[in-house]
Image (cartoon, rainbow, N blue to C red; front, side, top):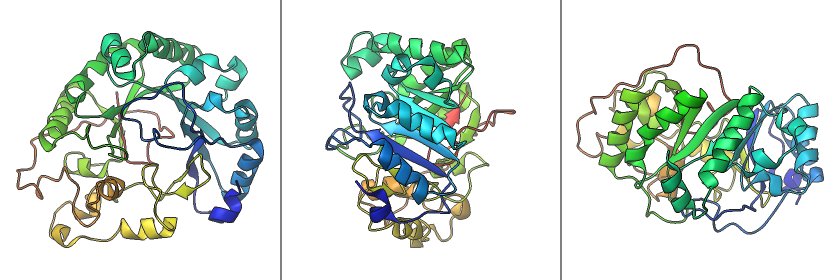
Length: 332
């Protein structure tokens, strides 16, 4: 696949996420990649990426399990040789399988967990022992002093379990990164309005914020500015397409997406949080087929009072590759 031909040159982009492969050892019910065709990039493709993104500083490997790409080691070596900071998101397989010299080239590692207990996580992902393998991956990264986060998707079925991750964070001295579920394939796991804000209330009581770029949380957290982060970064999907948001692939160009996410909705014009929230997560609005409406979790749009919640900022937290290139919240 010719990324250069399909996408052009992006000198303004410094952080990208790359789906090196759509292959995975699991088939999780909520995964946005479940219906992707099987594709993997070659080392030659990644050389084209370096030309297409000449000012690249950070790369995160995600989508499938990266170790299942046959050129994985050589691709890591390629980016590392250019002084590019590397991160990876994995269910544990890639971390536990790669050679030590390869693992040590990563600055950030995210281990995906949906529940903070083995019985619930393994049952949800339909593989016994998966939680234990994830803990082994975390332990291995800790031995090399790599920045580690648990990556979890906030869904309707785990909203009340999120606070349970605090015990693991304290045990391993790591972070928790939460993405809000996007209904790319099914709306079955979308948290309700009440579930979402109840989860955020629990988070406010148990955690401190390392970084937050989820626009709707600008209503309860002071450091979120400028609306959706997607657009300041890029996502390269395993089929070779490039988009501003990992969940949105049907935009004609990245410029179209980036322009539309800044459009002020009529409903939002008088909102005191307009400049911070800008209508909420634009990618979520597109996926839910409501791009012309405010974020589904907006209290004003839902005729609710502003939740009595205040997220607390952690002092002295490290800047992470995932911190600002997509709509997410990182906690400790």
